[in-house]
Amino acid sequence: MPVHPLWRPYELADLDQVASVRVGGPKPRDIRVVPYDAGWPAAYEGIAVLVRAALGDRVLDLSHVGSTSVPGLAAKPVIDVDLTVADSADEAAYLPDLEAAGFVLRIREPDWEQHRLLTDPDLTTNLHVFSPGSPELARHVMFRDWLRTHDADRAAYASLKSELGTRGFTDGMDYNNHKAALVYDIYERIFSADPAHEHDPRPRS
Image (cartoon, rainbow, N blue to C red; front, top):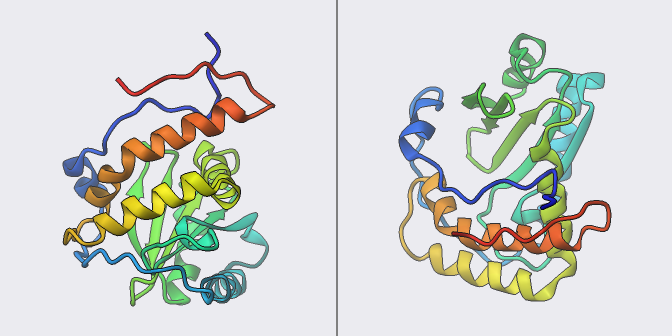
């Protein structure tokens, strides 16, 4: 049975494991979900300028991802940015310059695509650092582009996020766990519709 190369089984994040990869202790914050803000693309551009000034040609790719990159979608007012560098495990090659630009390392995940997460002091940016070829980079773009063009899934996602935003979450991964079922189902539709790869549906068990 063929499966899309970007497929992942349905599972929730282990919150204890998440805590173990945080750097400098957790940063609890109230999870707020707000209506789409037309200023979010400009906010991303400002972050992109800052990152490119800090790293120059070490920036292999930079993308606005996450809910703030989807016009009309309610979201947490936090700009998600995917940064591709030559080797995200080689922190010495990029981290000092990003820290000098005001970013703070918050998550180090050697066992998950060598992912690094940096934020700004105001916690309005999530800067995700990956190496070339990371499946997560492609997954983020596919999810973003699908929601930009599929009204029903965008509306369902917005409704769920807005409802979760009223529950008083303070841990972003706990909040994400409560979105995980719908996110998985949307990915199933994305993979099944992808003309480049066969994918037999893998419903959640």
